[in-house]
Image (cartoon, rainbow over all chains, first blue to last red; front, side, top):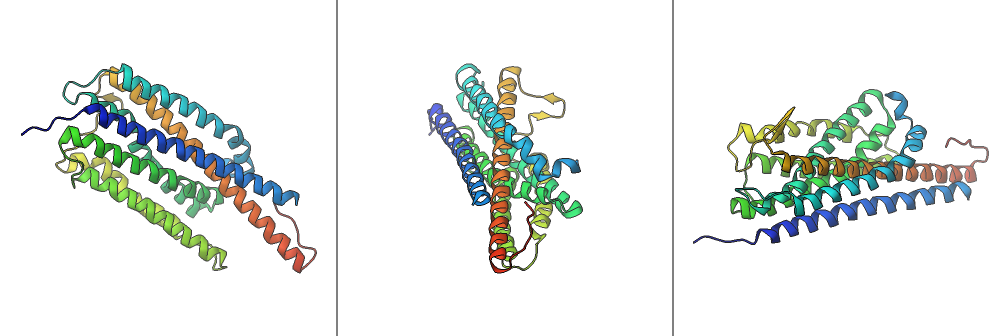
Length: 46
Length: 252
């Protein structure tokens, strides 16, 4: 018996996971940086 | 080189380089992935699943490149005691682990239609999984070392030593497909030559540059986060000390 696959389902799954994870990590790192720098500036001023 | 290890100089460069790397990287990676999905041809043998290569190869390169960066930074930290090198190594660990995990997952998704299985315990896949565990170990060790440092037990070099020792796995990953029998294909791109047709190679190279820029942007953002946290903590500690003993000096 031979299995048949819709190859596009695998391509879409890989791209969705890769794209969402990369964007999520970039956004998380950027927001954490902004938060940490704002906290440092606040501590400096206070 | 030592001049660039100055935190103030690093922050001056990173202030404009961080958003530039992230935005340029996102633009290039998006362009390459759209090219790979809609305009690059399907492979004669693998069909449309070959399009996963435009994501899988950059993540593999960055997983291995990330640990190489940790090893170089760890060496610099041990030999020259540069605090920025230790911060760089810490900043690389999380994105390195995430891209290694992405490499394993996209490879598994590719393997099911191409090989007929999600996973095999061969040299390449197993050594890449070991790399992911090394990243987890590095992050756990770093958290523990910083905990004991905050508890006043002195600065630990154990994470830097672990970063150096773990680099042994990088050549194992690279040569695994030539040392052992593997379902994984041998390297398609080596120094100065490629077994890939230009139709596949050009979007792959653009994707690799794009993801590398994103990786660089993330690392710089994380380094800035660590530096800002350390500066805030140092300031708060001095304030607390001044409150107890008036007349303490300023450093940051």
